[in-house]
Length: 360
Image (tube, rainbow, N blue to C red; front, side):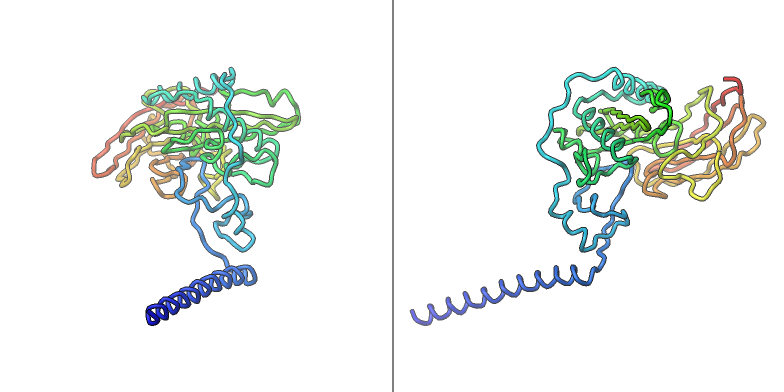
């Protein structure tokens, strides 16, 4: 019995030493971090295009310079909630502005042959809250700082969760800000906001995404600025592979130029204005290889263009962007030809569109 008792005490003492050692190592680790300030790299995505739900949300508003690195001053984010409490129930009645926004979105989705998205009141509330945050803090960002007034969640999915939208497989967001010194220029115009997003490169893609089924719109203003936000989500519905391109075949009155009024800049270092962007989305395809691209004017002459290939940056994802180097000609028919392989399947597209006349 004494031998057994001795062995048990020995085991107990060893365990005490091990536990104490582990605690000491952990303490030393955090002390070293605090005093030596090493940088621990963490990959993150701050995108208005495809804000998929992250598995671990450690990067947040305390990553002040948004360089994707966590220092001793940032460790508190690990202990900080990514959404505020308590949850707020959404307003059960959509506003006229929200209905105008969803109608305009579905107008463009019908042009490209996509299903309509429905207006969701919970998502409306999240979009309204973020618009209020942006306009109050003079921000055009998709993340929020929990130390600033109006905080409801760090990322779009956090804000949806804050308002009670918990079951989703995909979340994405577009936002914009308008500044003016004259108040009448800041009249809330949801259709104008959606048109503006469609006429860009990156912000067009969420609106024409086959992955989304529900959306919400919000706006907020002060005497000198007006913020728009639109959130899109998939509540868990199945998706399928499909090809979406814009402008669509035989579409007319297409703008001739793109002034680059977009953050992030799709053509950093290039001179604006350029030609109107053409996009092709290979939805739900992972392995995309572009074989050939042609852009021809109505005389069959090649038009020079920049191209953003699928997955070439964190924002373009499964899409291709064709951006003419110079503004297009008015009242001209252009032909686009794209040959690609998407998940082993050959895709051969050819279509035309016509630019607006100079007087329209």
